[in-house]
Length: 378
Image (cartoon, rainbow, N blue to C red):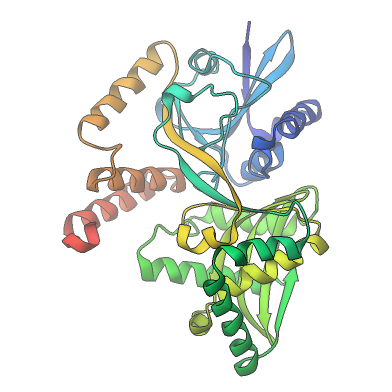
């Protein structure tokens, strides 16, 4: 019989951490710094509502779920919306509704689920694709493959690179940049981009910025933050910051100097980053989902991710199923305006920790949707 124990990530025992890492290492689908105990513990340093549930059989851990426990027993992925990937880490399929009930949860809502054992198959909506730069041979072979798929595109990138070096300065890639001023610049550029485009600023809450800086200070090949920057002359042009575990890197921030936009520095960055991967000990540069036009030309493999929700068995789960059915009736799970608003509100609920903060952001989002013109609303 499964027994569940839930605690703050800071209380994770060394033995459980070893078992968790071993389960991740046993499945290629779980190869991500976002899925191991290091990420859960890092989030726990900046959020008191972080939790880890361990399910055991005869005292032996068989499954782990890192999450935030919200009102009503709803679980959200740990670090959401920074957790592009999440999973119930296990050795095999388990009865998820029963397991959630044993953990005292009403249900779990997920947006980037990896499910190698198909335990959630009946609870998932249409999958989406993530993009991964994975070296299985030489850098030269990889670059040749992506160039062959779109010769005209990459010929243009080469032209822009030569033009940038002539007019601004030579390109120089720094993997593992330790300059805190550079990270502050990347954050400022990203927040300015959100302000221009109207995107939800995931860097506005104190906890997300605190997490970035803690990871930046936890620099290490086994687990920690990693900043990869492209300089043009002495000028920072474009950079990524994210989390690394061994040879796998997952960036969160991708931002560029808007003054260099004419040279497409983001695309030039990818070519330089791929070339630098072996010297940095990286085999996987995981770009996650979204921004297909920007990522797809450089990625030869990807992951299939699912969104959806699963209710626990028992009374708490019934309450969640009732609430979800009501949302479905008004189109909250669709691609229309109501669905987009619901996803925006879910993001706000994940980011904002205080009730006043959520109410303020909710009101702004609703008013923005109501006052948007037809083109903007689409």
